[in-house]
Length: 380
Image 1 (spheres, helix red, strand yellow):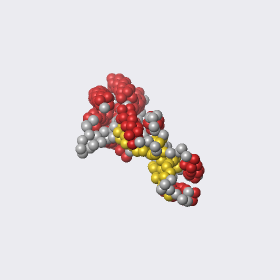
Image 2 (cartoon, helix red, strand yellow; image 1 turned 90 degrees about the horizontal axis):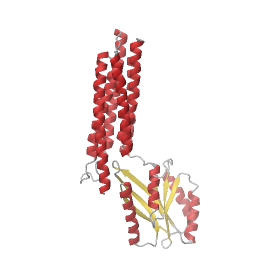
Image 3 (tube, rainbow, N blue to C red; image 1 turned 135 degrees about the vertical axis):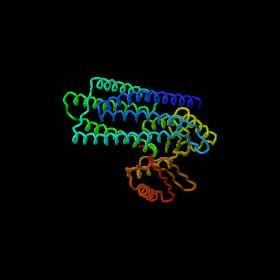
């Protein structure tokens, strides 16, 4: 527990420190670009400065969100405050969308002004030098954020890094527009501003889509799921690993559940030892509070093996069934019980289960068939 807390504290400090550096860098860029934009009468440069200002605000929001997300769980919010990071991303997306809309609005005004009054921006050499230097600064900020984000596994910093590198490309297009206006005396200013605005809107919608998807609940990476399953299967006494469900409550703050198969002749004490090994593994290695359910497995007798193979043949006729598990025959009560994982591609999963149940009942007329429907939380 102490190691996890140390890692979280280190991560929080790194995010805040990196964000502060981004704020300082972006405010310098805002000052330089706003100065050049106003002097030259360039709407694209002014909108580029506004974009840098929203980047600085994004870093401020990231700091506030990180501090709030690190609050300890309490009676009202027992799962902690980690999901505040998703709200933070949504607010950042709204800022980006606002900046994009303003860029397009001001650019359209500039185009109208040009056609009505013939207004052209006027650039001096020092203006071009300042913008070129600003591009280099933005590239440095982007690479720094991306490196830090990869190091501490922060999606916010990685996204900010990519956004900064993307901004440097847009700023380069602005620089090209300055050269064209100065040396070719050709108006391109407003059109560049619209292009920049559209790119900003695209970036904002992507951030918004990702944050809303996280709020709804994303599926975990398949490789990560398989790694966890293999780790659980490596524990002595575990015969199978099924129904793995993980819910994220912020970075490295997961709560989940899993079913495992064990021999049906184990004592409660032996089963508890297996369960404890799994929960300890999940907490220390995967920062996950895990609840473990038990399936009793017994395939030692020929009747069970034959029955399982016959029922499996029926199930294989249905392509949307991804997995069968929890198979158990109670010979005294005449009950056959098993779970089916049905793909989300099946539009009528209950109908599929009904068909399998009817076919199985026709095969095993002396037995009651109980089929449990499991959703595909982590298989596909």
